[in-house]
Amino acid sequence: MLTASEFDTAALIAADKRYVWHPFTPMAEWCALANEPLVLVKGEGARLWDSEGREYIDGNSSIWTNIHGHNHPHINDAIRRQLERVAHTSFLGFTNPAAIKLAEAIVRLFPPRTLSRVFFSDDGSTGMEAALRIIEQYWRLRGEGRTEFVAFRNGYHGDTAGAASLGASAMFGVTASWRPPVRQVAEIAELEELSAAEIGRIAAVVIEPLVQGAAGMKLWPKGMLAELRAWCDRHGTLLIADEVLTGFGRTGKMFACEHEAVIPDLLILGKALTGGYLPLALTLINEKIAAPFFTGKDPESTLFYGHSYTGNALGCAAALASLEIFERENVLASLQPKIRSMAHHLADICGLPQVAEVRQCGFISAIELATGDAAVARKICRAAADRGLLTRPIRNAVVLMPPFCITEAQLAQAVAALTDAIMEVCSSESGAIAHSPQSAHA
Ligand SMILES: *Cc1c(COP(=O)(O)O)cnc(C)c1O
Image 1 (cartoon, rainbow, N blue to C red):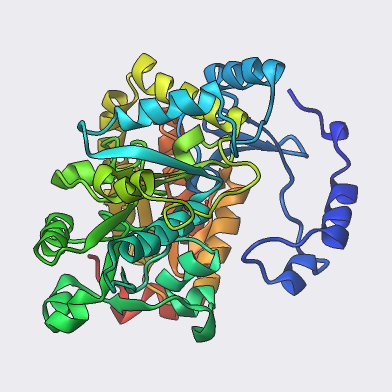
Image 2: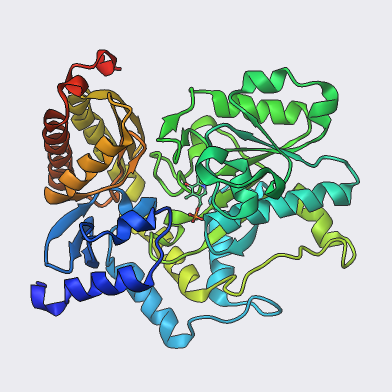
């Protein structure tokens, strides 16, 4: 096991504060003397270790990416084997076996002649950015003036300017002058109220199927996705499913769209695609949308989009290995009892007076506190870390979504840590929280 002396934690933290800029982080607070961030140095299965040798459960799957566990021998081997051949070669004018095999394997996960074309990029944001560019150009090639994107309020589709324009603006701060035309709606009913002229300008509707992740794991009503598919079909507009969070088993099925037998026109995959190992994303496109790009003349029908690491062989090797694990370890079947077990544990948490609502979709859950104070949720996550559980809140909700490989015992341990953390923090806060009138259980 690790010894504390392997790492000089104080020196590492000092250098981090001196040289590093962290994402979505108020850096003045981060750099304050009192902040002692954990330096994570090792992982195994659902567990992580810090530089002081302390052990934790990875309660949010390292920001929603990991599924089969850290240090998985099969993914490690696949990456090592690829590394011994070559780490990266250009996808511009060349191709490589790992990317070809991955494209074929992914297409085979969908019914024939549906999502049959794969565009590679680096992360969820660029996967979404590519989708927007493809659709914009598709309608231009078709000579139709469909230029507006429709997104759902409080959604999240990534941080590049195009992707962020679709998302909750207050949270992701893209100014109006940077935005491609986006109309945000709260629900399908709002779409029904649009005029024919307005509908005729809609290029595509984008949705996080089943669950809006960054909104705090907000669940869509059952049937909503199928209803949206039908609306898009009725009005000749496209449906983009952002499965960056929900893809690869998170909701209990391989893809969230399967729950409502929906096939979108474009589908974005990221996060768990490589098992949570390497940055890689895919934009899947159906035949109809891809066709004009494959039959037309250059330059009108060439997609001028791509990144230096497009089709990265190490990432593709990891993704292929992750797909193999789904088969070898019968991952989706063995996840089902764990989903039920998570629900069982959460029912107890739901009974706490400090908790307003508990939401679960497959192996994703969020515990919304009765207090609206985001600082309380942050304190709870710090208290949970002291008890061996790492996670990160979204405003006043605490996320629990460990890797699928977590054992029943570890899951119980994670929930116990979270329960104790809630009790401790909320009892030391003003009595107003525990006795708040909002604390009725959902
Ligand atoms: C995380 C996420 C993204 C962005 O992915 P990155 O890899 O962080 O760029 C997009 N859409 C959804 C639904 C996500 O959860």
